[in-house]
Length: 96
Image (cartoon, rainbow, N blue to C red; front, side):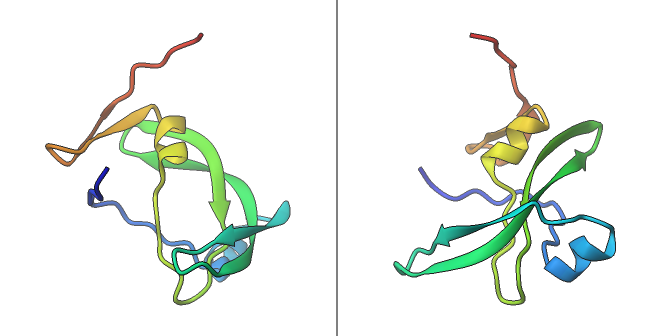
């Protein structure tokens, strides 16, 4: 698995989220690549990318935290990543 960059605007500073009325529902501990850990608040929000909308968790980031649009959010939007062409494509939704 490699990293792929898709150009979207992601802003996750806690002050921005609170400023638009997003209220944290709980705090969780997140592991870091260096072996450390941090505590961050989380909430649920609606996302929009083009015509696609969906709800997924958001982490109340702090200055210096990396911004990331992850697979959980993409799946909630009904999107998938094409890593070869580096584009977002519709996701074939399935019920098992």
